[in-house]
Image 1 (cartoon, rainbow, N blue to C red):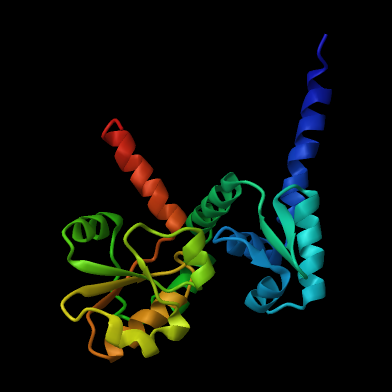
Image 2 (cartoon, rainbow, N blue to C red):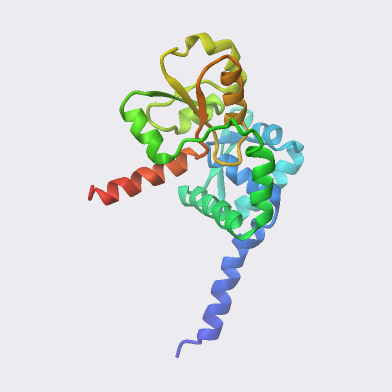
Length: 224
C-alpha cells in the first residue's frame, strides 16, 4: 500500500529545494539576467553590482538546484538558465508579485512611470503598426542579448550607443524602444534620448519572452 503522507513529504521536500534557492533577491536578479541570454561571471558581477566572489557563490547555489548550467570559453565561465521554462517561471513570479503586493506597483510607478510623457505601446498596437511598416522597433539591450533572441523585425542599438547612432534612424517613422521587460530602465532612457532630439518615440515595456507568449496566443486563436 502506498504511504501517501510519505510520498507528499518526499515530493514537497524536493520542491522546496527550488524555493530555497530563490530566497535571495540577487539570485532572482541573476536568473532574470540569464533569461536574456548566456553571460560570464564577470558580466553578471557588473550588472548586479556584486563582487565576482559573491556572484560565484550565488551561481553555485543555483547550479546545485539545477536552475543554471555553465560552460567554459577560454578563461571565462559562461552561465545560462538550465531550461527555458525557468525564464517563464521568473516572468510568472513577476506578474504574481505585482498583482499581490502593492509595494511593487508603487515602486514601478515611482521609478518607471514618473515621466508623464513616457508613452507606452500595447502588444496589439505594436503588432499592427509593425505589420503596416509604421514604426521602427529598437532593441536597446546589449548586443549579445539581441543576438541570443529578439523580437522579429527589431534592430539593435544598445542604449549606450544610441546618441552616436541617431543619424542612422529613419526620419519618417515613429520609434518604439524595448529592453528586458517592465522593470528595465534602458528603454526609458532610450525614449528620453530620442524625444530630446525631436524623434517621436514610445516605450514597449514587455520583453522578448512576453512577445513570444503573445504570438503563441495569437497562433492558438488562429488555429495554427
